[in-house]
Image (cartoon, rainbow, N blue to C red; front, side, top):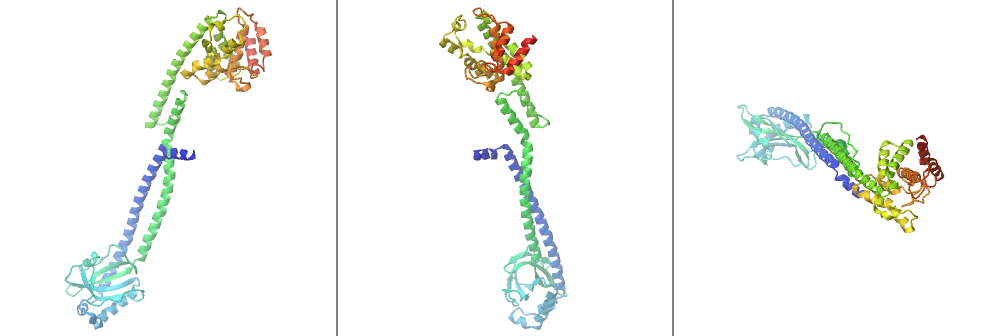
Length: 466
């Protein structure tokens, strides 16, 4: 049962709207978060690149191009005073900038993207660092397009480089001679741990923001979807009332949007259905009352019985303070209470002598017959209760269901008292009728046994006031 309810809830229109809104908000949040992340990282990286190019340019200006050109591009070049001079100068510079990991000088070869080392100064404090490259060793720099640009102007890699020794950012600057021609380029690799740390922090914050956005999206999505579907749920509730026959039900309308317009149309439809049903029922009641008059016309001594019972019943109900809608139902039920006698043979109805047990059994079926006659037209259930229960007794000895006390519908109990009183005080031809006072005494005598005492008290007040 719980699984079925959960399945129906997940398939509901409200959940579909909520999911659509949650997905939309999450996508918006993810895109926004991604853009902010990219902007923050790019800004930090651009700042680091600018600083790196400035440092590389300053170091390149401190290196003499003529000295570089005199270093032989072979292993023996490392033993030359020119090499040692340049290496010592770069070492001193490195001590000033502790973030620098590698410093090297590269010259061009005749092959595109391939360079050769002139000087290579590595940090010996790092475990696993390869020994410095020798002058003339080849280096494939095709992976780094900014490196070739450095022969014209200072440049720096646009992305971080990550390897087994850490995260680096490389910058380059040309080493120019007196003729302003580029003899080589100076490259430096600095640790970019702060940029990488910022990247990690941004990632963590992005995940946090994403999770927070997910929670808020779910809450906000359910809230907004609940508000959006509230009017639809009200319409669904209205259709349920209409389906159950409650044509008086109306859905409250406050706004002017499309759903409100639909709601007004629904209320208008319900009002039209109510009017149509009222006309059909009025026609039906007219037909039934005509049949009852035909029935009573078969026995001149019962003429007007249903109308009198209805008048008595309405007066009792008003004395008891019943609401008007109940009184209207009571009036209809009282007029139709004997409709079941249409299914009883006329010879039994008009018999002037005592009925046999079999004939009495047939007569006792008329409340059920009456209910069955009225059921197909979807008549008000309380009217059906009046027709079926108007021969039940307060002590439980009535028929057809032997209901007792408060189990008997109050409207049916009122009709029971009115029906019995009219039968006692009307001229039946074959039986002497009672006077008003005698009828009242009979009501008192049967109060608490055949009749509801509250109804008897109210009925006697009505009779005494007339």
